Length: 188
Image (cartoon, rainbow, N blue to C red):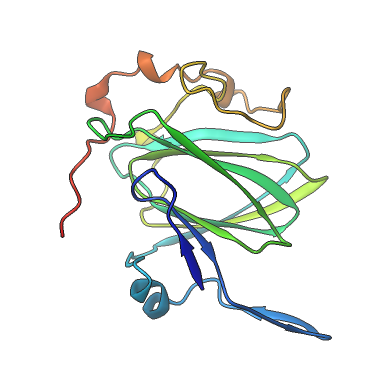
């Protein structure tokens, strides 16, 4: 597998090894030993699956406390996936990174704890899978407006379909910094 490291510390784009022939293909979506050797040594405790139609945008979500690291990928269709660094004190605080994930490219995106996460569906439908490092905690969930002008995310869908909850999130600058995750310098 190949590991690509975007400029924002902690984010990883993973191109798994895919073995294909006339029958189809085989790939590992998670192998704790192999991924740890590649630098992704985490403990996943919950798997989620989301099915959405074209134009649906989910996010930008986070939990604090009970922050979740996520390994995300697409089983069917295409999505544009975005992570926003919300770690107070981070050199990349407020910066975002986006990547297209699809059933065809089979890429995975690792978003560590301390990021807000969202995605929009680019195909007729999409089946989106993600592994999480902590359990879903409704009491500690938060969000940021998907169209926060200070972030300037270049979403490929201009008029997305949003949940009621996702239409009410504040701008990042409106959130009390004490309620966001704190940056800690990586060791080593």
